[in-house]
Image 1 (tube, each protein chain N blue to C red):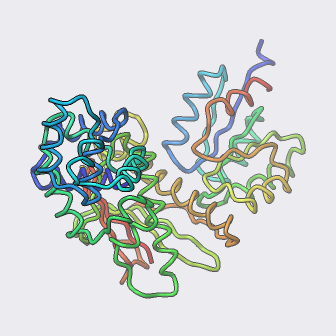
Image 2 (cartoon, each protein chain N blue to C red):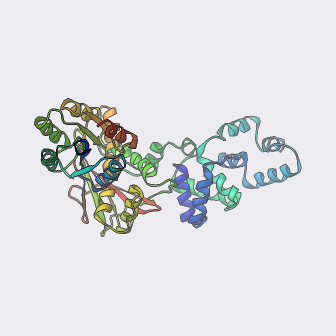
Image 3 (cartoon, chains in turn brown, green):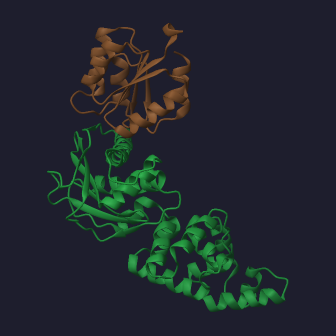
Length: 121
Length: 286
């Protein structure tokens, strides 16, 4: 069973968003949730934990989500990164997809969208 | 939006208790506006004439409109117009208040007239109930190249407060105040239009707003409380940017900041204050 563990990395500077998303992910059957509050932390935690999925905010201090996504993709071409942002503009969407985001969810997110992603891990 | 403004006005004037206002707003959802209320609102009948028609209705098996036409109070064309208005939302609160028996027609008519003259809103504006137009009328924004953006920003913020903070909101656009002891949540928007945006409020309001927005049990001004109000601003600014992007203007956001002092860049900013059941919130845009 150990090899099927569902590990998810949440990267968002908002304590509220991390708390809510963590509760939802646990409900959806995730086994381990790791939290980062900026892009730099997310890169470090990605390397050490190799999560199945990363939920990444865009606007963050230290290193923003698009830059963090680029670095993670450099480290692991197959990284499954889903952007979760309040700024769902076409530009942000295109930027994220261009550098390898698997999906883009606009806040406030819908529980269904998140649980579908987890089901497909 | 008119219901929220007028409801708050009635409460402020002591014409309704907060409990009655809550009940009336609840009833509003399933209310049907009666022709008498519409006739007063349009200025075709006085409250006294409506009462008279109601008494006659109790004795005759006739509709309100038929009696009013028979008495020569309104014309057929006016009745047609009133019937057309029956589905409009802006009078539902008045009807709910009457149905609950919290105020009589005369008192309500007087309050509505007073509200119109104090707010400067015209009958057409109230009937149309377009938040963008109402905000432009009652919020004063000094002339500047960014004036239109300020109005768009304020209008969207009011809509988002109604959408995310309160299922039965009331609000008053209060005179702007620059509280000395307050929490400030701020966020910068960059691009062809540069805006510094902030919300300020006292500690109690911040705690209530955080609890309402997050759905969490928040009882003090904790890190989670601060994060919740900051996330509300982030969500609102994100929606504002999507609207701007759809209009061809690409902007970007910086992370939010929270402090107990006014953040830099807000000197001479435009301030609008909103009085919500949660407390008073001031919105700064520069």
